[in-house]
Length: 380
Image (cartoon, rainbow, N blue to C red):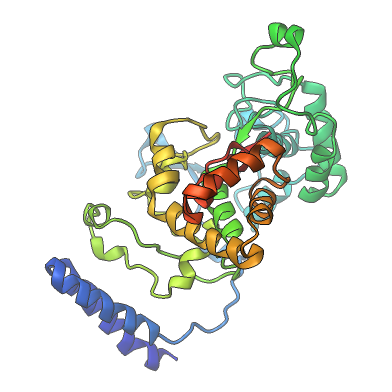
């Protein structure tokens, strides 16, 4: 296996090195040759990874005199941060052979007051756009107080009782009356008392996140590649962005075009380059920790959905799919489009407007308009 892969790896390395100093015309030829060479790379052998404690390589921890590494004092054991545990919790002896196992057991201990609360708060935050504790990265004194402390305790207890299983927690929240409320509820008195809807008298309208929008467009258009696993996918982007990288050769586009339609979870994430589509819809900066995504509304989002390369390519695919399934029956085509994009049939007004639109505009333009519907982009 190694003997087969080594010459291919050397050729790939040589081509990438040559691309660093080549001009645009040469770089295109080298890129094509690189893609052909990558296709010759033999598939990796199946591998199984595991983690274990190696007591023989455990680094001793000492008290350092005045913080100087060379002035080691007495050896000390291990213990979680003092602010996270009761004062009476003892530290492990310096000779403990499996400190990582002890740490893991402490984290998932049913009596640990933090783990379950932090996890269920993040689940709640995912579904409602705001956690019961509005600062999911900070459960300390500087963080926000819980809006519903009894609810947080109840959910944490249910989570522990179910064996820290996530699916029962999602089911419990999604079947609740609170989650099943409409965001369009009109209650003047409630709005006056709680304008920010912290007490959840209605559902908070939520825009899909960047990855959800991309995956939904691929799914509706019928182009989503459902392949599981494998290496990260590098999709094509503007040359100006690639050339701005310290090493442009690092952005070697995945050779197989079918891979470019994989789910967004498989797209490569580089700290110094965000995909324009993802950035427009508030995908976080990989350079910093992100406890809560922002949800903004600005002009580049409309430009991406109307003029962007990705949006237009998926609109063409959606148009072809609709025409293939509905044929020349425009009313059936509009009905299928609305059911695919919004999960419901069009009302009479929407049907009339869509049929009028199709009399003068192309199917691709209609499909593009469907991707821009609030019913597609927002959860109500």
